[in-house]
Length: 188
Image 1 (spheres, helix red, strand yellow):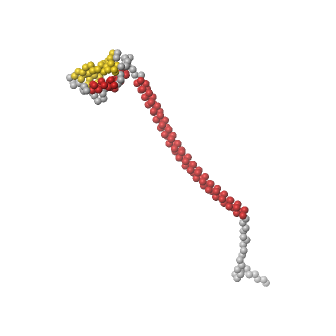
Image 2: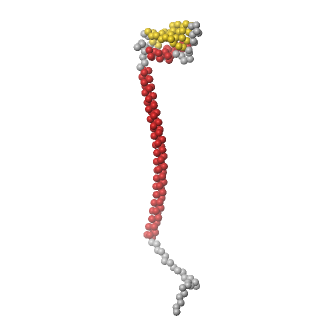
């Protein structure tokens, strides 16, 4: 009979040798290229994702800015219409002012010549050719020379003369001025 010892013999230490894998240089080069390519692709993917995210953020920012500009454009259009309406009104007023002749121009100049700080009111204004007679009342006679100076300075009259001053019972004074017109202001 043959006996076979199936138990491992511990007395002899025999080193087992494994088959060493042999790597070829071409395989290592291909592996290195594959790893570098995978790394480059990963880096490129991350970079593209960041650019896409930055582009989206920029797009949203530009959309908000466009919305804000549209609101401003509507406001500008509204103000432009308002400006045009006011400008057309100003043009009409200036056309009317330029077209003033005769009595209207005469009255405007006389009214603008009345001193602001004096109590002066006019009761009559008559015109005969180039001679204009202004009659009025005042409580302070010292405003009459200011009124006369303003009439001369308006450029419509060649001369302004005081015709009379009468004191009234109610502490007012009646005055009369005679003006010679330098412009043709005949009544229409």
